[in-house]
Image: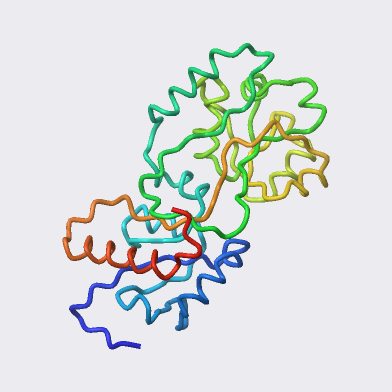
Length: 261
């Protein structure tokens, strides 16, 4: 490893360390030949960067605050932490017009269109996961259309910000009442202990867990893929901006097999 001097500008890159995302990123760690310990790793291919190993949610928060310049996270976490354009884009408003033009009998969930201006690359690391709205069969039988469900009670989720943004499209832009839980959302909805919780909104990879709990899907609201995200913070230091651009160029070249765009 090279010797770092006090004048070296190091670009901090967050690498996921938890659950499925860390497993998916294992090939990337191998290609970069990361070496290090105690959560800090270096690569001979990217000499001007240090890779920090943290949970995905913590990487997103550090990106938002400008502590990390780059990080690998999923679209779901990026949207939850407002790393995309905040608010509703013109594409979303145009989509809303399409939703409103349908009759209630034909209305289906529309995918949430977000504006990932800070996502610099999509990583091909398996099939995307889906942000899915679901409910117990008895609830769906009583409330067959998304807008009836979304206006009749609370939606359990561990993604309150994303749920509030994405589900408003199917609720004619009216606010959606969500309640945040840290546990397994499928279990909370299936148990039915809180009658005010009429559905759930969570990340679904295969749908097997929904089947195990006897839950039914209203539909997938958004897809989530892992990607390389950049901090939305304004970087005033020219050397830092140049450093980020250089590191991104190296990552694109070295990880070309995994880069979608």
